[in-house]
Length: 343
Image (cartoon, rainbow, N blue to C red):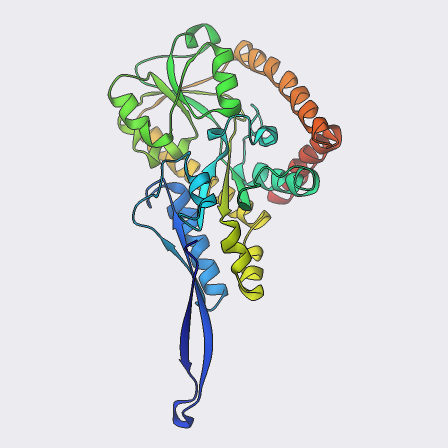
């Protein structure tokens, strides 16, 4: 555990020679993405700063200069105490976070903020009381990515037929299921390896949101995109903390961490992602990226995948003791309510 409690002597009124004792908490944070990545620069680093400000400087979160593990291994790194806090992509863990798939299905990724907050509410109300997905660590909160898009290099994909055989990097989860149904040849690799896969001609494309294209400088390589209204898929990412670290916090420090967790994390992360998606599209449009919007036939094919996914989700929820029908209804009700507020 990297939590360190450092005794500080804070001088009071110097003329009176008074002083008081305070305790400062330093937590460590490991990121597999560079500090310039969307998640870090526009979301997680500002989040760390907000916590420090709210605690009057008592809580600091130190971003380590190098990641302590690969992207998928950050879950174990936090569990084992190699670092206090990290973020993980849910698609990296097949078979574990399956109930997160509710927020990963096609056609619902118009706003990462809305979708992420809606799912966080659904998770807190229906899933968390029944399923301990994060049994080895403490979940602080989750946020959603934006519209999932198929990006290609020197290849046009405007139908499932033209998608067949294309070698595409995919993270996992619902994206993998959609990709396989389209006939893509999936390359399940961490996001940090995408540039090498594309530049080396190993991959023909990648399933990513727009902000990730700019964050990983893939606009230097890619020249085509296939979009579906609401996205080919969605995805979710979570911030986790070591259980012992969290338990060792003072009540006051824990209250501050909690205040900036949960729905607040979902809102802040989604808002950052939506903003960067918009900015990245400006950059991509300036480079004359060839963008294809899926036609009705292509969209009908994709919609045919959704109903079985929802039914499968409900079955998994029921097996965990969750009222899947009520959870799904609540989730989409929250999306509609949040749309009204946002608009």
